Length: 136
Image 1 (cartoon, helix red, strand yellow):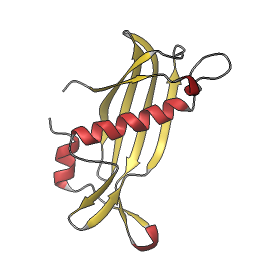
Image 2 (cartoon, rainbow, N blue to C red):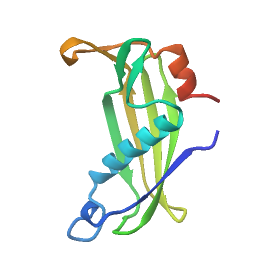
Image 3 (spheres, one colour):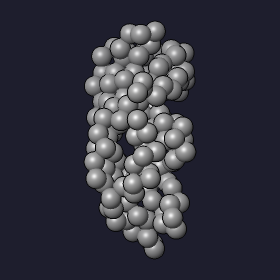
Image 4 (cartoon, rainbow, N blue to C red):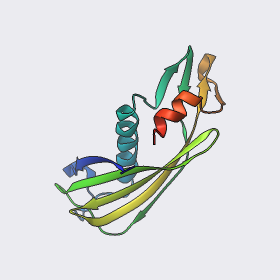
């Protein structure tokens, strides 16, 4: 299955004094790409699932930088499902500009039931939700 692609233009407010995208913004870009990936599959990071409120809090995020991105660059953010575990999902992100690699990252989230007072409990990813995450 080809990667899911989100395009994002770099805003001026995303850059530092050198005119380069501040490193932390790549984490925001990954989150936006994850949400778009999920919405394309009829899901979201917070889901009402058979009467339960499910969420996917992040437990690990990494990003390696290859080349700078600057104001007004149009970035391609390719999202692939790197690993689908029993309770967790790991996404891989590849950032590029006109085919030139910019950065690569990974994000792991755990499926949790959200209970009273926003208490969370890790649970197995429901089978139908797994199928939507990985339809291929």
